[in-house]
Length: 338
Image 1 (cartoon, one colour):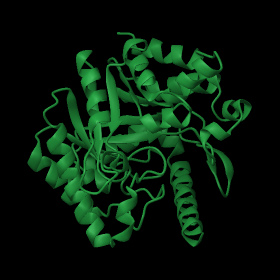
Image 2: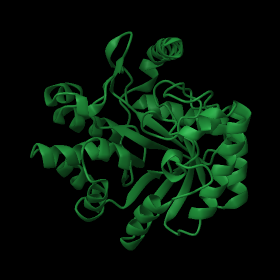
Image 3: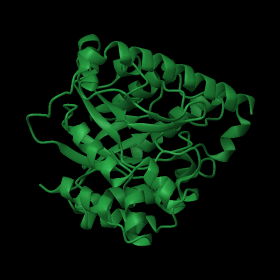
């Protein structure tokens, strides 16, 4: 309980600081401008999210490929899934997704490491809990090495995402999340194993983007318009689209190694302090209505990003199958049209 309170206070303090900074640059940000070229749309997909909603995740994934016609995926290699027993790997579920994408000329941004997207962020196998931090760091590097060595023969992997929001205090992790020193070692390791670009991610609203981005080629950032906070309740972010353009220019001016900043997580599903499947449909739509989804997409178009990954496709499929509501799914199909 003490750890939860401490984490909540830390996130709350971060939120307060971010609001102050965002307010200070409000008038400098402006309404933004749409990218002059075409936007490359993709989706983030996490099998467990589909399973938690009572779905067959393989059917959801195939529907994304064959019905929505997704050509760009952000996938993850969850440690607790592929090495549930210490020393015994089973990469088959991730292999299957990459191979099915490859058959349809779809590209993969593959997230590897310990802290990845979707709650609880650190998808730790139970057996690591008996070890101390130093040993866990060593095992994290070994897991990273083995993952990259296994997947690097796939030609449709376009980049490696090393960790997810490694410097942002969000999620539940046994002991510490990856430190700055460990993150640098992880990036150096992946560079030694493969020549493809390396990316990582950061909070679009609650971070400067400067610290961990110093190590990567591309930086992915999230974009959230409405969240729930244990202290404030529902919170609507005041940033305008130009806010992201200004921060992009700043991070690229300071960290010249960052060749591109892209939108790795565009919020298009409800945010809640309880599992999504525990919420009523009314509660879900109060957080993310279809009208809000439409305005969020239009907002994202004005941030200037030319690569955007949508967040929430598992929920869209659930709505279409369990509630005969295909509005979100069809919206995704429209965006994927060539």
